[in-house]
Image (cartoon, rainbow, N blue to C red; front, side):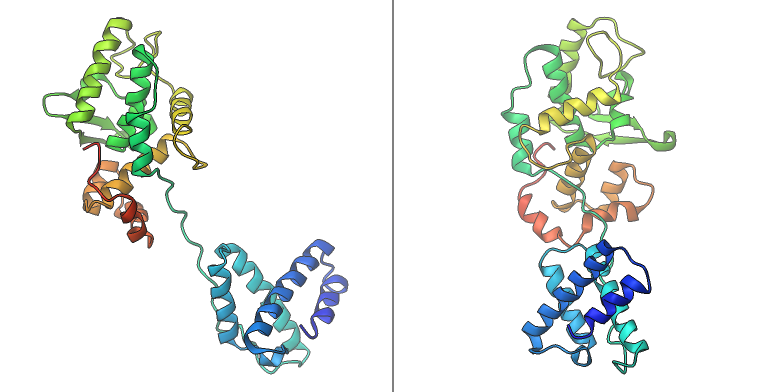
Length: 295
């Protein structure tokens, strides 16, 4: 773009910017100039208006640029036009009324229903007590949406098989009741029978235990989840919280009310739960085309 060289020299010699920073400005201006030439032909600063800048923003978003990257590019363009305005090369700043895209909250990472079905129905967790326990750990996260600390802290006394509910102690020692379905009920009963045969002496009434009888600990549960999720998914995050997100997303996309999900997850505020109503909601609905498979 015309006059860009003068601007870059100004950054180098008057503002003492590093060569790396100057190169970044240069690349941003070059990218904008290329876009402008494709849209309006020969580019001069006086031909640039807010509409052209906004069209550039849209094209960057369509190309997959993050809002932070787009706003950095806009910052380069703003600096350039302030430089031109100061030197009388343009009469007005075309970016004065242009607002960059807001930073989006990261979408929760979740697994597809098909991946969870494959994991729970087809993956071999191994024979015996530990295989049964590890399978139930995954199924419990997926079927109830409980937090890692809540699963570790679960006691036998918190599980009511007759009423098909568990009582969990969440943040700030707040307790809530979560129902569970027949499939999870059977898996829990099978685990308890095997556990009681294999580990007759257990620490302080813990529901999930190691072979030593001690309660599970955070790192161990994280390893169990990561190891087994790796068998069915390529998502980068493979944590217990991903299974909590998977539970919430599945429930929401099968028409569960947001308020009910809030209570099941133990969120303080509905605003926290609303992250699941992101604009990709309809897209997610296509993935979850049946009722929650473990209800």
